[in-house]
Length: 177
Image 1 (tube, rainbow, N blue to C red):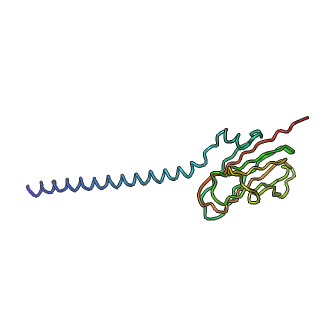
Image 2: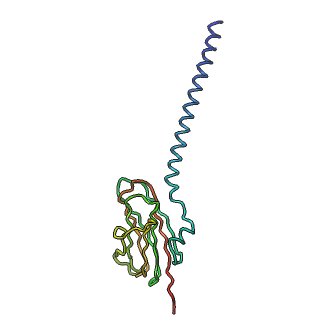
Image 3: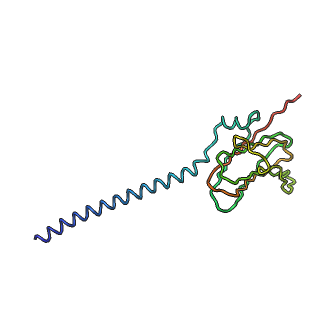
């Protein structure tokens, strides 16, 4: 009888010790998962919506028309992000690119795509690499729309970290006489 009760005593001690180490391992794994999830959320949280006050500040006297925030993902290899904007012919527009949350090495290019009915070879209208960024980390371009479609292209040459580029489009009101 003695060996049997002794084995139950030792089994109970070992069982408690085993459960204790399992609990500490699960706790450590849980902490690591929370840190990893938190880091992933911070990378994607950079592309939150821009508030209306910031948009008004960027556009100045121009009237708001459109807004788009584009996520720049970390990458070792260069890649492009493209989207199209439809414009009204002969209207004057102000385009602002807010680069405050961008990654390194992003070049903004604007192309005239021509009319929808008569598409032409894309014609380069603007490249941020040939312009100087303002002290507020923005590029702004004002022009009269030559045609009705424009291609906006972000050339991501060196995404050393994740970030965002915000695009705000506004129309400039002219004094009508």
